[in-house]
Image 1 (tube, rainbow, N blue to C red):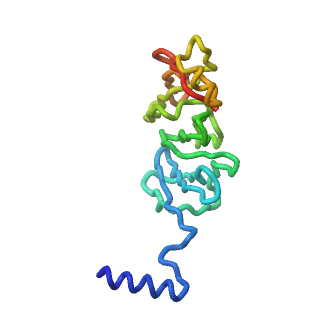
Image 2 (image 1 turned 90 degrees about the vertical axis):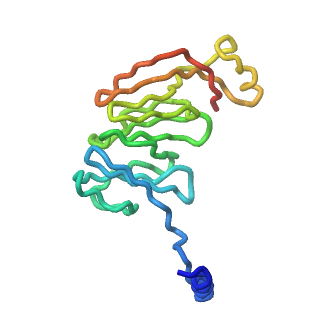
Image 3 (image 1 turned 135 degrees about the vertical axis):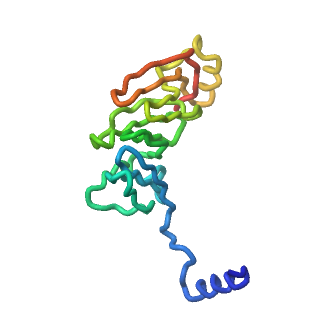
Amino acid sequence: MHPTFRLSLLVLAGIAGLSAAPAFATEAQCKFGGGFQVISRARTDAAGNDIIARAVPASAAGPCIFAKRGGDIEISTAEEADTVLGLAGTHLVMDRGTGPSRVLVIYDLSARKVALTLAYDDQEPVKIAASGVTFAAVTGPATAATCPKFKEYKANGLGAALAVETRITFPGLARSQSGKPRCIAQQ
């Protein structure tokens, strides 16, 4: 379509009180795996995503359109700022929070419940594979002796915590840690 013609159509639509795109439309994001389709979309009135999941045969994943149906699993709530990080089989991995204190959530789609929540450092990458998840888990508070930036964080109104590389393996959620703990800012 010629750009001038397209502009003319948009102007006419505006004069007629029509919109080129619905104001409520938010692009949906989809993940497929483990016999599930997870559909998320950004909330327009709060932080986080609306997230639903539905059981689907591997060969029959539906279109990526956020529309609740009977039998869907409603995963997110308005009180929680959840965003989808990835899907590993039947385990949905999400980030929860808005400030520097974040929580990694592992939701078991088969059981329809949260399987694990752990405070983590969202500044480090979360690696999701079919066999498990690797991330920097918060292990506890830091002190001036264990954190070189302890005074700086306190001066800025923040706390300090220790984080260490952690691996959660599927399906049993066994936890292992490696490397030295490091200090991070927390709210």
